[in-house]
Length: 184
Image (cartoon, rainbow, N blue to C red):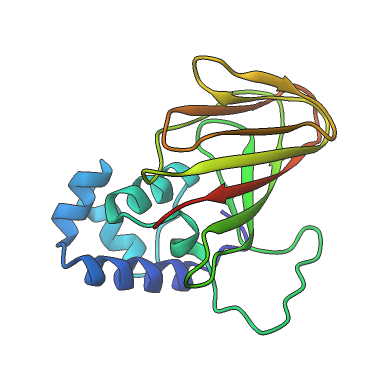
């Protein structure tokens, strides 16, 4: 993980776990991670992957962005290559949170950087989630696990985020914008 501040993730994890009233053991069990891993993350150590943070977000009933979002100033510019980057353990895949939904809104915006290799297979997210993706460069395979679609520059796809889905680069340097819609 690079550029994703561990202290911010730690504070957000503690805040969301406290909000739910669940113990470390309960959240770890629901997320399928070791209690020691969750404890390390809440103390600001460890190296969380996309998969670990997604599992914790689902266990806590919140969108992924709630665990990695910093306080947002009134005007915010994120230059290419900046922002909190979270890397996958399964594939050459990284996600940069560009914008998180404000209270009362329901969209998170991500810049995806993908390289050929393993596929990023996602378990269902928070119920009611929908993902919208626009490919900027390269080619990828994306959508539901049982019916992925090959996409190229400028192609747009929307699919249920609360069903198993996949994203796999077919060419080096593939990039895309992902908008996650959610009700939580």
